Image 1 (cartoon, rainbow, N blue to C red):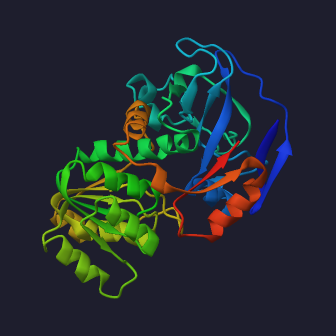
Image 2: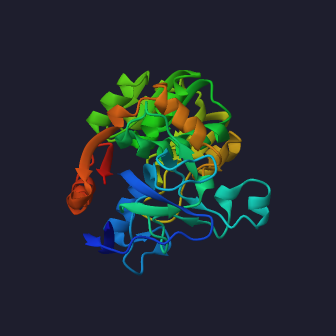
Length: 338
């Protein structure tokens, strides 16, 4: 079978590899589509994700959907499924209380040393396969995973109402916009790319600001009414946006950090502002039992997925897809179809 394998920085190759042999309790899934996440691009561009380095050649991709090739309990062969990429230990105190997403030894598809889903067939435990209705086409199944990320962040924020600020309008930021406008009276977005700003506005954001403008700070403070927003989501993955999020939060507000800083494995913010306003700074870790809701929202159209998939490539052009996604910042999600 074919698989895309990352051999080093900028070196992605589509190769013939053996079909995986399912372990105990696993089933084979024919992959239909895989999204290129920002973390995949971290690995492609730097050879590392945070403090984790690649090492051996690795199959990327964790935003994926496909079709089961064999029967499993509740999943007859031929079932269309979204693949939750988490592989927790199921034994530690975090797993015992249901917080499998913070399992210290959790394996994750495409996170070294575990191969991802950018290959024709993967072996998966059936409990991490969730049925997908026909109303959600194959090329949108990879959006289930980032929507689960956004849903978990919203749960941490406590189903925000009133005013919400979202810093960053990539895929997760735009999904956060769609979730926030369902409960919040006003959603304010910051995003440097004009195409993404336009889409954020089309999806319901009341105000969309350009953080590269010299007067961005005063304009953001004016937009939040010189008081601050009860909830701020940081979805840009930049060091400076953490500080901007704290500055934009109201007294007693919550800042939910969703992005992973690209420049360094650190965050910086004005401690005096955070302390005086008693701001809660929450770090969001992927998701916890969010896939079923994400599937339902996308399949019923309550969250729009189609505008976010801006580029599609076949598997044999995976190297071109990664090079394009790395060089281009205007698109939202690139999907590779197998």
